[in-house]
Amino acid sequence: MALIVAYDVHFYDRLEALFPHNLSVGKLFEGDRLAAEETAFRNGSMQAAYYIMALRAVGLDVAPISGFDKKKVQEEFFGGTTCEVNFLCGVGHGDPEMLFDRLPRLNFEEISSVI
Ligand SMILES: Cc1cc2nc3c(=O)[nH]c(=O)nc-3n(C[C@H](O)[C@H](O)[C@H](O)COP(=O)(O)O)c2cc1C
Image (cartoon, rainbow, N blue to C red; front, side):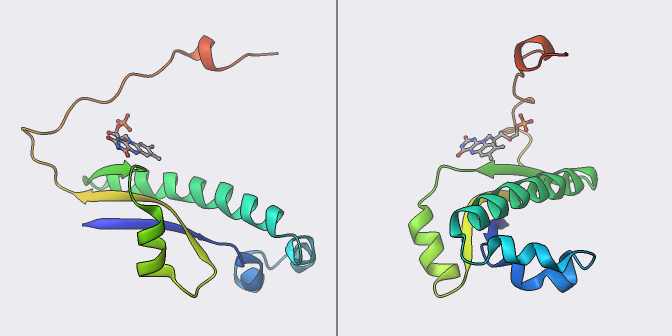
């Protein structure tokens, strides 16, 4: 199964559902497309990461993919909407013959500093 992760640049139209304790933040984004895009992209990416963890926690394999034709997916699935494609995920049970181990990570000292 393929999962399309997208973000709604007009997320601030749904603040009553998403951020009911401070509806006035919507004013920050109306008329500031760049701020709205940046916020939607950041928050949507984080929510997608949690979603990937949840899917993996229930035993599914999840493979994020950023190497795809974004324009085509955008046109096919989100034409005429305020949503923008971020990335795809393959979701299911991978063929054990084809799966590879967890990718390497940089160590803590390389990617962070404690001050
Ligand atoms: C946002 C994102 C996009 C990715 N895009 C690709 C891709 O286009 N092609 C690819 O071979 N791997 C891609 N990867 C890596 C694989 O999906 C990777 O195998 C997967 O994240 C599992 O590895 P992990 O255990 O290190 O998370 C991407 C990973 C992330 C997080």
